[in-house]
Structures are given as C-alpha cells and as structure tokens.
Length: 529
Image 1: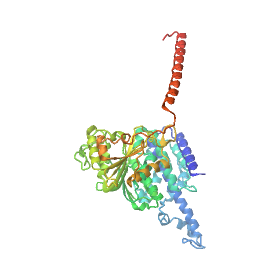
Image 2: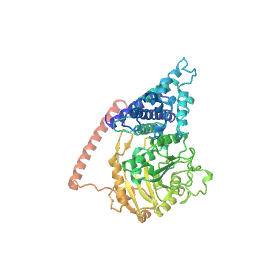
Image 3: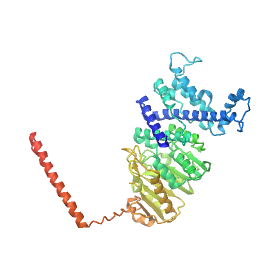
Image 4: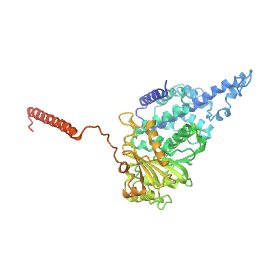
C-alpha cells in the first residue's frame, strides 16, 4: 500500500471510530484524551520493536550483541537492560506500562471481579498510573504526559473501547518511520480538532501549508530556533524535516518555545521528545508577554503563528517594556505586540517568519501605522506573502506571511508576493498548497535574495523603500504586484462586442419572458404584481 493510501485509511478509521465512541465529549478535552493514548501506544510499539531487534541480535553469532549458545537462561534479563533502549533514543517502558499489559488488564478493572492483587482501579486510574510510570522512568518526559484520565467525566468502558481502537494503529510501514506515522496522526487530529473547536482551535494549530512555506523561505539549517506561540510545535517539526531533506543535522539547531496552554505545552514537548530534539520550553506554561520564559534569548530564527487580533493581551506591567522599541502596541490588538516581541528576541543577523491577519498590513489604529513605518524605515521587512482564503480550518480571516530580516541581502527592497490564487481545494471548506506551490514561491524568494529580477505582473514585485513610502507605508501586496496581463486571443474588439451584445440581448429577452411567467403564476394565485 502506498504511503498516501496507508495514511488516508488510518485517518478515516481513527476519526470516524473515535467520534462514535465519544460523541458528547468537547473537542478541547477529547484531543488530549486521544493523543495521550496514541503517545503511549507509540512508545510501547517503539520499545517492542527494539526488543525484537535485540532478541535477534543476541542469537546472531555475527552480531556484536551475540550472547553465546547457552544464552537462553539470561536473554530475558538482558532484554530488560534499559541501556540497550536509551542508546537508540527509545524510551524505556517498564513492564506495568507496556501497551499489552494495559490492554490485558484494563478490561479486568471494569468487571465485578477484582483483578489479581485485589485492587480495583478503573480504566482512568490505570491510564494515569501508566503515564506516571513512563514519566518517572524517562526524565525527558517529566511534567509532559496527561495524568488526569481518572478525573474526566467519561464512562470507564468508553475509555477501554478507545484503547482498543488505538491498539489498531500500526506504527510500521515499508517506507514510513514510526515517528512520522505518529506525527501524521497528531497533525491530522489537531487539524480535525481545530475545525471542531472553531476560532479557539486556531490558537494552537497552524496549517501545514503555511508552516512548510515559511520554513522553506527562512531555511533554519542551524542555530537557535524560537517560537513564542508554539502551540503543538509544528514549526519545529517542519524544521526537522527541512534539515533532514537538505542533508543537515538536527543537532545543529537549538529549539526554544513558549506556550500558555498547559495541555498544548505538554503536547509540544511530547512532539519534541519522540524525535529526540533537545528543547527548552521554559520552566512552565506561561503568558509570553507577562512571563517571558526566555528573556535573554536572541534567536537566529523566529517562526510563529500568533493569535490573530488578540484583544486581551495587555497588562499594566507591560508599560514601558523594552520590547516596544518601535512604539507601544495598541492595548486592543496584539498583532504588533507579537511582532515587536519577536524582533526583540532576534539576533543581529536573525530572521523572523510570522503569520498575521491582513489588517496589520495597512492599519493605522492605535499607533500601528507608526510602528509599521519605523520597521520599514529600519529596512527590516524582506517579504510579504498574501495568502489565499480557506487555508485555515477554523477562521476565514485573511492572513499574510511577514518575513523580517535584520541582515537583508537586498537592502532597501521588499518582495511582495500575491499568492491569493495559489493552491487547490482539498475538500469543500479547505485549501492547501502542494509541494510545487511551496517550491515555486520559495524559489522566487531566494532568487530575489540573490539579486535576480523576479517581477511578474499579478504575482511578484520587488519594491524599494521609497515606493513603499509613496504608498503611505501600506504593505498590501495587491498595491505593488499589479494585474497579470491577459493574452490576446486574436479576436478584434469590434467582433467581441458584437458577440457580447448579441448574448446580452438574448439574456434580456429571456429575463422578460420569465418576468411575465412569474406575474402570470402569481395572478393565478390571486396576487397581482
């Protein structure tokens, strides 16, 4: 089965079945119930895969791990040596936390007969104990896993049914790595939850199309990568894939992030842990503005999709904050507060890639126009990408990508990109970019960086700072790229007009006929018009 078919079947099976199991549970709660279980299944499967590798190696005379002909008596003991697992970046899973043990015993906990040992736990308590054991044995997971299943208002047998469903997730495929299958499951569920949660969901889920485009444009090969509104860590995951695809090393980047939602903060940490990425997400979940977890950080790359038009971001303690270098952002809208925060945390040669609502391109409310003018005059705006509608699953607010660069290769110029017609519809409600779309935009951007002429009417235009000033520092791409020229079809204007007016006469005649028919029908019902 192809990768695409495998993943599509997996998506359909999981989402449809899960909705049948927990139809009344709020999506905001449900996502953490499901994804926590998926994580346990993944670490257990990874552990079992490594265990099978070791069993084969212990019995292979040509392998370094060969234990000799009489090893049967102590193979089981060797299989419980955690060093064999951790050396391959596989989490150590104690026996009482392994998936098979959990699945074998969770049904017993629901019966009237007490399980062996005499302790009645319940499905929720068993799951909490499992999470506790895994976390205790793996310091990287400290404070990360969800351990409140017993407190949820969910029927215990429903939890057991959900466990059986997740047991069917195959973390193996001929060409896909287990962590990529898990990542796809996470990404799919987060997208579905974002749609179910509406606007609130968009605060943690950024569409893959946008994440990949920003990463391809910014190219975070090495250095410090920071996301002050990280959600589930999508930018970091995409950065990892970018590095792998370009023959780089994930160890060449350091990951920093911040997130105020405790459960989403844990989800991001889980995403990093399974990939073996060292990360610093601060001591705890916290508000980026009032409890900055990385006050001294100056990152090489800042990548983020902060909440759009956030109206409750201000706190009195922020008055006169050092981050407002270009002016104090308006208290009723956080767009420029996020931008200012990111620029503050950018190194002298650093690059920022962020997504903001389109209003930020032209607004003058609350001093935003003055802040934008100063940022432009400091020659920080390298590119603006106008995005198409329907990229987000949960909001129709028009958005754009800003690329800010403290060390622009093309000084005094900004590339405007109108990508509003790029992409394709993946269903009735949502649009996406394919690889060719992403590559086309990114390649043009990098050609601009190299000093090449990339102007294309209706799509790309490299404007000077003087041109932007003449437009009163408005950054809407449509003002600069113009309109694409239409190809001449060779038909003389007079002939076109004759054909159009003939068609129009026919439409007028049909309209008159329909009007008379409607009047006649209404009169027959006793209603004169």
